[in-house]
Length: 165
Ligand SMILES: [Ca+2]
Ligand SMILES: [Ca+2]
Image 1 (cartoon, rainbow, N blue to C red):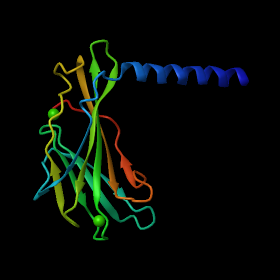
Image 2: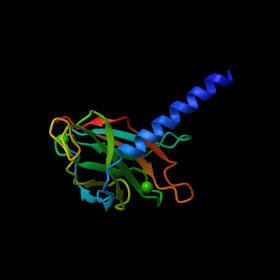
Image 3: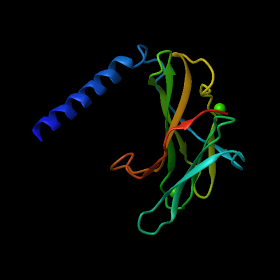
Image 4: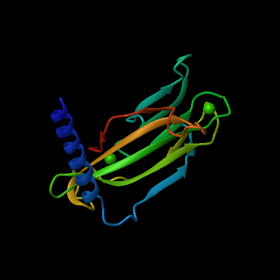
């Protein structure tokens, strides 16, 4: 049993080392936080995820991503004096096929419920050669209601979304 634990720890350590060494040398592409512009509608091709209150099942926030425009939408779904936001992370693949962090940020809806906001983004496409000299671009969103005491705790996390349109 002890032997197995040691092996797992070694694997985790190796993974952490790999992550550290494959990080981009430049930190120029840092966080890009922005306030959503009011939006009347959501792009028809957008895929959406909702964050619900665990007790009431009321929808508190909805976040969407349109692969064709690369735009991120966020709705404040419940009038409760609490804003909503989408936090996003973009990874791209290098020439050796490994995924690495590229940039991240937030899109904050300060328009009150039930209004939508949009943040216009432009990510590398999955099929085009990117800044890491490879092909591959994926985005992960967390659709959140603000939690001042424990930021990032009231969220729904999407899986990786491949930017292939
Ligand atoms: Ca796209
Ligand atoms: Ca709200």
